[in-house]
Length: 417
Ligand code: FE2
Image (cartoon, rainbow, N blue to C red; front, side, top):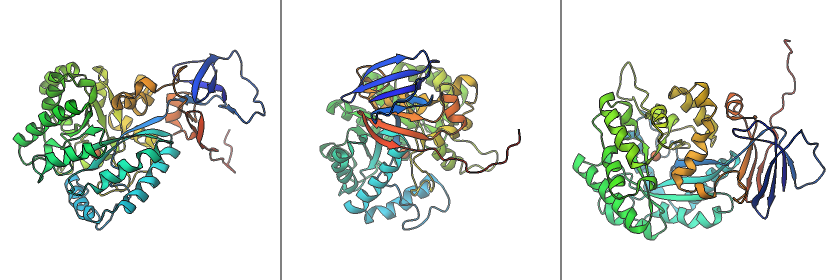
């Protein structure tokens, strides 16, 4: 396969890219625009951006497409979402889960995603969702790389046999250990769960991704516990703190002290801006907090932050369509990241930063010798893609075309100039 007239991130000239046996074998600058040939193995990128595939680092595939089942989340709060989900959970069957997961992965793939980290609720003695999704991993590997988080939605120390269920989840294929310390019955349970989670991951050679301080409570301070455990166990880059929305409400003096620890720990951060702006601030009158973690400040301090959708049409969030560019657009607004420097590197938030979080960056990126996994986005650079909410024109995995799209064309318009 040859790709001609490609733009690459951070480069000004056009490039030709050669793919052989599923691997990038040559990436060379062009001196001029090339005319396309009739070869079926050639893609003319037409000056659009060839970039590494999108990474969805935080979604709940077990819950997708269940909004309104059996009842709608009327208050819009995180906590009513957990209640509604606990009513839907007993109705889960392998067939129901498989059908919703496949439909959603298809949607994500069509929108340029090739890496997914899904949290799967393991506060279910039958572990139906975990077993079903682990069973789909092989089938899905043609189109995506899937990581499964054992996610204790109703707590580890606060749920009957919580620790045993987490251990069983590992036996059934979980790659990542989750947690939810702010939802445990007591602060002590939350602290205990964080030390236990990091030690368990270390013992099994797994990663950690905790729903950490997903609450507007400024006193919710489990991030410091998680970061300390990661630092002391030398697990930093293998640990992720998702959400950390309480950080929005921390006072600046505490945050300044906290950032020193966070930097030393080297942990990753996932922010879900559309989900958090919707679920947080719900107990405020006016002014209402945005309830999104300090993405801009974390990035400026040199830490790894990525964006995720969290939900697609589930008890917590009724919208969602697989388009990470929509999440990125919202996140840039919400986090006050509309300056040129932020906009011109914004795709990092849904590409390489997610890959670092998933620890897949060794095999990720447009480089000779790496697997030929890439997408072509409408637009010549990060800014243009965001300005026009560019479509994913192609998604290619190991040299095989997964998606090819014709951009919508305008049939009639009135010319003003
Ligand atoms: Fe989540």
